[in-house]
Length: 209
Image (cartoon, rainbow, N blue to C red; front, side, top):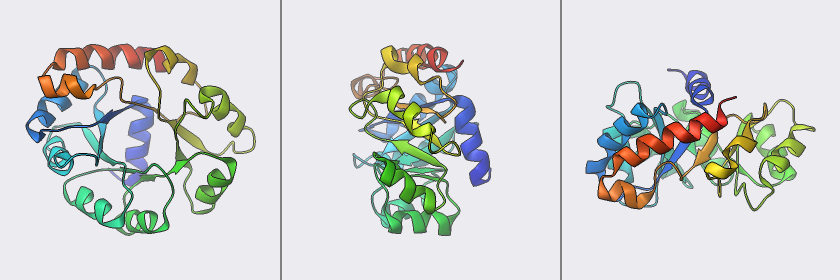
């Protein structure tokens, strides 16, 4: 898939599970659980030593789109893409990260928190941006407000988004909804993948209009 195709696929799925994984051996069964729940994608955050190996394992699961999350350096982008990541998400906007993603042809979703940051990322060519941390910044109401002056952009709300808030993000300005609620870290560690299947289904039902 091209970079544009990846972003279109993610927007169709509408849910972007945020995964913190401690054991790469859990990566493939987790990916299969997400597929079974109708959410064949994941953003694996670079918060544990197992993250890159987990991406590599998930990249081998058919019809699954794995990406790198919490990318804050160009070297992290390089390692993640080499492992099979198909997209890169960052908590903020950094020129070196953006440049490396461009050089590698990787779709990049930089983080923004203010209108000024939105404008800066937009000027750099990013029309899909991560709105982070979504809940403390006003959630769906804040995205609706930003959609006024920036009708050409789409946002990925992330941070404090659980099942109770999911339906509020059924907005045209929302590209997909990022959440860790679907993939609890302890459930992954304990191998409780049936919980992930159920949560993936429940969350997607709330965000798909």
